[in-house]
Image 1 (cartoon, rainbow, N blue to C red):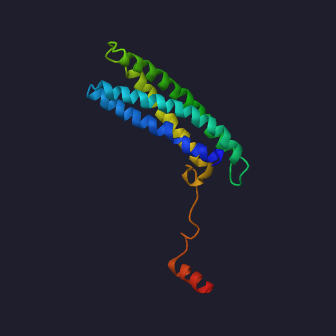
Image 2: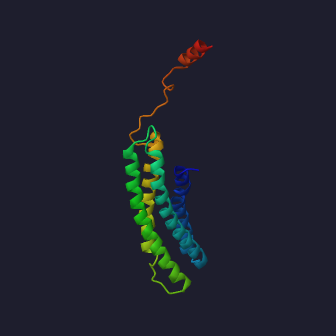
Image 3: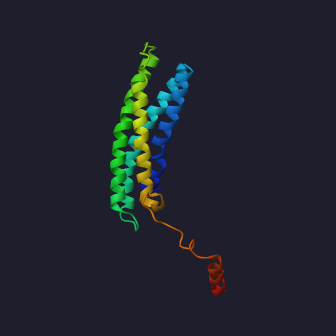
Length: 170
């Protein structure tokens, strides 16, 4: 396993964990279930920690892929900038989740809207996570670029042309 492979393994945890943590948190809030909320906060803290791991492995992965054929330095830079924004946003999620976890564990009475800043931070992080995932995918998958004109070269051939090609070969 090289550094690029390690990054591909690690980078999904913050994104998936953010979504799962949010859904579990909503469940815990809707059904007023303290244990479920604590679990959700743990998932969100884990997601924050894995974002730092993804950022670290991303730097290592860049060294592996930057000189490969077909890799565009602009795509790597776009992904890196997006990942930095995500790191800041999910860092806020982690701090807020840790704060809420302490309140939950100490059973401190909280304000009615105590989870609101956390939910807002999760939404902002979700936007940056989507952007980071897209820009990362664009490094090796040009077909997902918005301006992509990647087409199947055989798609414009008529069926009769494809049969003629096959008969010419053998």
